[in-house]
Amino acid sequence: MNYPCGIRALRFESDNPNKSDVSAFGSSCAEKTLAFHKSFPEYSVTPLAKLENLARELKVGGIYVKDESYRFGLNAFKVLGGSYAIGCYIASHLGMEEMSFDSLVSEETKAKLGGITFVTATDGNHGRGVAWTANRLGQKSVVYMPKGTAKERLDNILALGSDASITDMVYDDAVRLSQKMAEEKGWVVVQDTSWDGYEEIPHKIMEGYVTMAAEAKEQLGEVKPTHIFLQAGVGSMAAAICAYFVSVCGEDKPIITVLEPTTADCFYKTALANDGALHAAEGDMNSMMAGLCCGEVCPLAWEILRDYGEFFVTVPDYVAANGMRSLAKPLGADSAVISGESGASTFGFVAELLSNPELAELKKAMGIDENSHILCFSTEGDTDRENYRRIVCG
Ligand SMILES: Cc1ncc(COP(=O)(O)O)c(C=O)c1O
Image (cartoon, rainbow, N blue to C red; front, side, top):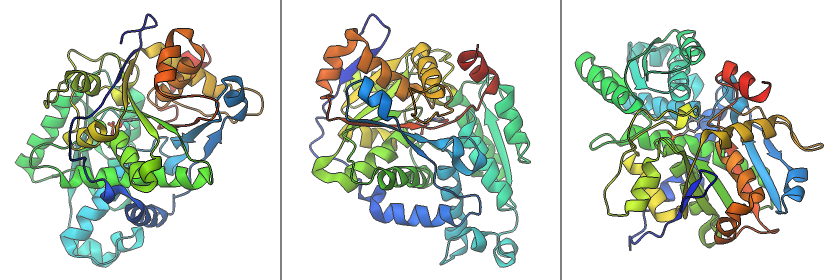
């Protein structure tokens, strides 16, 4: 359905009789990833903003926003995946029994390991997480970024000692470049999307994201989220969070909505076609939601979101911009959240859904009412400060 406000939405029902097994992302996964992330000196649980005034105003039971701008001092959630995958890679390479920050930086590990170069393609946040982890563990990283990347995002990665550069390619071609360079140079690809024969590391990356979901569940206490809105680039984050909640909530599973920018609508297209094939977005994917500008879905992620995602939506940039502004200046005593373009996209959509009469039918179809408890993840802070200032203060 195309709404005059520029939003598109579809309800999806999987015709797959054998739903994918998501137990690998359940509570025992959360235990492992939390223990690993807690072993870093930089770890602290990120805040969950409970927007009570806004929930009252918009007539729902609760609106909760997990604020990942506090993650490891890196302003985004992404490091959770890269760090866990790199940790698992090193531990399995050396046959280590214990995997913690201390064991990974020990002299013994360094001596056995020698030097490794980790390579990745990124629109910013994932590459920063990989570069940060390589740096903390005394290893090297190479990072390829798509054309149009904000210089601040490149500088943040260079500052971590990475050999980072902005290419003249779109994201998906930069991914192929990192794969090709790894083959030529013997580097290790740490990519947050899978392809045929490359599944182990993306799976570990997705497991790493479970830390964020498990923290949110703990912070919600007795409150069970009825609706979760997840933004997707390649979809690894959305799939991991969805898989965790399906696994731990069982029959009480929240309704999952997957959101993308209008211009980078690979999940929307794939769900719309529902023909068993994956459909790519076309063109240069211009959107300020840089983290979501991925043209090709991660096949591992699609298997999960196909089976457990109920709604797929696409939104124009103004939705994210409104989200950034209202999170920055909340109602009454609600907590403010500094949220960047991709980070604020789902919250911006929720605010539009609950207040725009054009979307009343969609809200009803999603089963949202005064008893609903809505969870969003603000997956990044102001990772492009110039654009953040232009939108929020301009
Ligand atoms: C801030 C932010 N949010 C969400 C995403 C989407 O994650 P995924 O590519 O796993 O779908 C990204 C991806 O880079 C991101 O940077």
